[in-house]
Length: 173
Image 1 (spheres, rainbow, N blue to C red):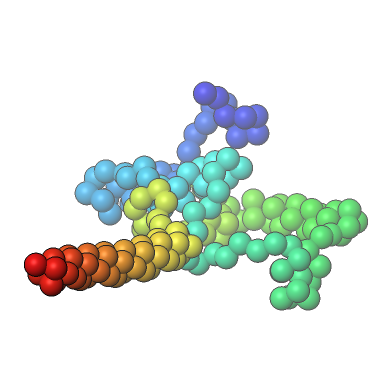
Image 2: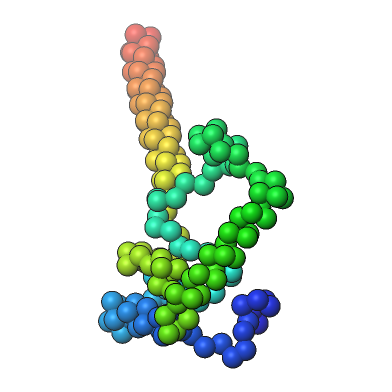
């Protein structure tokens, strides 16, 4: 499958910085690059920034609604078209500066945030899932205890009924 226009540049040549990063990932894992690891996802983000999201470390990022952000920070979460244009112009000016300071591979190292922290596995269990499992376990424990109590009561009443039945037979004889 071909990548969408914008990232599909002919010919696609990886900058030496990215090749070195990939070699570093392989060196860290005995010559093999684990494709389900966070470091490879980070590398993919730098190779294809529009298609691959940055893989934040587990538990380090909390998603919020815009209204929650605004309530916590006091900063509006929506911008007017004129404010967005100011930001675009600032980014374009910064891009020109960063291109001028780029290394021989065309990539400025300051534009490539890199974390060496690795996490293997696609989806580590979320805290919500763990809480749900713990809650289900507690519920199962309560149901088991209630069933055991009910069985004990039924057993005791059955034994008592048999004893009364035998006693009444003996009295009748």
